[in-house]
Picture 1 (cartoon, rainbow, N blue to C red):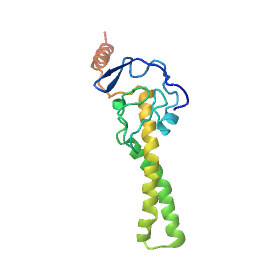
Picture 2 (cartoon, rainbow, N blue to C red; picture 1 turned 135 degrees about the vertical axis):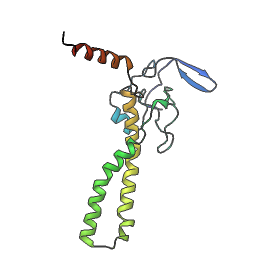
Picture 3 (cartoon, rainbow, N blue to C red; picture 1 turned 120 degrees about the vertical axis):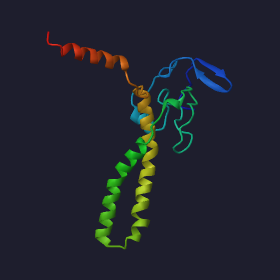
Picture 4 (tube, rainbow, N blue to C red; picture 1 turned 30 degrees about the vertical axis):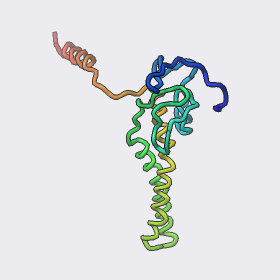
Length: 166
């Protein structure tokens, strides 16, 4: 179905839920992606590169149907929307200015030309950008940020020791 047999792996089924017996980043028989941009843009699982990342246009699937990777680690937040709007805004603005200068239409014409161009451009970019960000989170083992109190305590202690003129 995906270009070859599905590799065997160690799974435990519990209440219709697939649970991996290995870590999130490795599973028996699968090689994680070495190119998160390509894998994400294609909308494929970052671990096996065979399963689907999305269950709808922008909705992430709960897990990979091939290797069982749980996608709950993924949190692209507003990143895809920010990048899509940033990338689409410049060409849309250039088109709107050119259209106004070349033809001089009333401003309401832009509602039917420039606005749909901008919206469609953003929508076309959202899914590939979201896939890329999710695969990049997996590839770089991104986790929620936390404060390393021990490191800060050691740094403060070493600064106190350096400041002592004895």
